[in-house]
Image 1: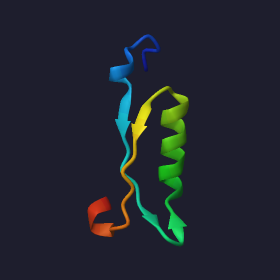
Image 2: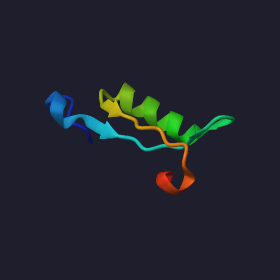
Image 3: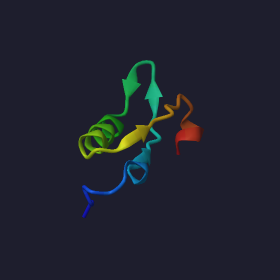
Image 4: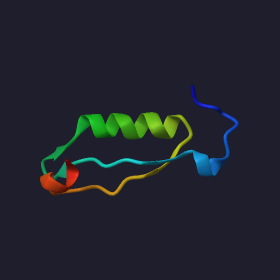
Length: 54
């Protein structure tokens, strides 16, 4: 379970997700939303390269 009293530095997440011109991964959007609602600072370098995203 997450500790709501944890320092801000401990609540940082790196989310890697695939984004194409005609498609954005719905699982990536859901993960981003859940992390933000849980108080995480999210770093999200989006990728347009399938090889880089896997």
